[in-house]
Image (cartoon, rainbow, N blue to C red; front, side, top):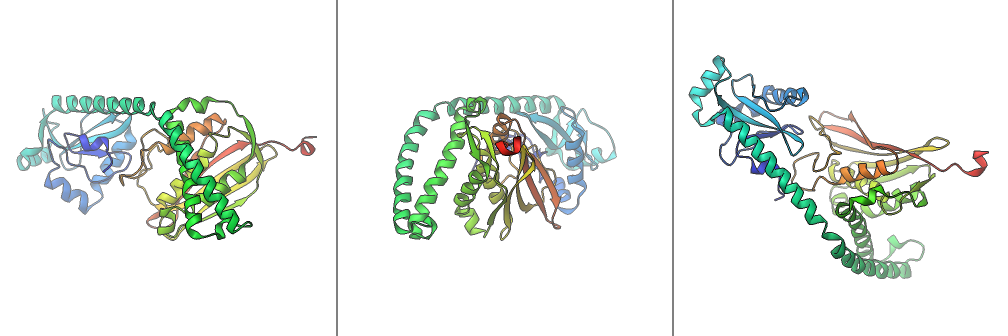
Length: 362
């Protein structure tokens, strides 16, 4: 199971970027009253939504039922200790009733503050050690990439020998190996930037046809296990202008946006990539998918943030994609539209300065 900072919490805790049942702490569990109220109605969820939107931090806030929450930042992300009966008390009839019924939830305000600071310091130290560890990746990554490149070249050669006009029509086993090695190449590019984020400060070094970059990514990622298992259809359409990009970093935007769209899409839905020229010297790239509705969409472009708590991913993808976008003097934006009662349409898009053909520039 993937590590999450809330797993180390001593007290019941709620991730304010994705409201869900308070998670038990290792020193104090959520009480039965809070569990029942959270499951039965919307009052608890509304309380935490309001708490998240208020931006209040490091202060006890009493819920409608007499328990208290303590919102604080955990390594830069908003969380809240919850299901607490503090002393000194906040006051009120509801709090007195809950205190009499649930002595196991009592804790001093001093301890709440101390534990929040300790948990924050611990998580910051962990993230710092992870970042340091990533610095040792490049040399090992170089060797692995060499082996993968050999596999990819051999698989591509054999596919083209069997089907010169369309490699996809070669032996399915060879095509699987070829696309698998191509997928590994995409992942290695992401890992390299994680290990060496100075790459996103490099200047542009080549002219590239944007459609081809995204089209290749679609071709590779449509063969992933998630896409095949959930019958996700990938489509790409639109214009194909050229732009000045950095050849090593720019494709990461395509990889991350399309891979995320596949990962979070509901089964038997479409992921559509659209490219359109919006002015003589700018194009827009948009990746659209249908995914389950999220009550509060977190700041997904921050390091370590995930859209849901399914235990997968490090929360680096969109953060890195945004850094690459900024390298290219643009910014990825996310727009959501209600699609059905339980799903939303998610659109990740960015504008990019394009190269104006000489004949049009005159």
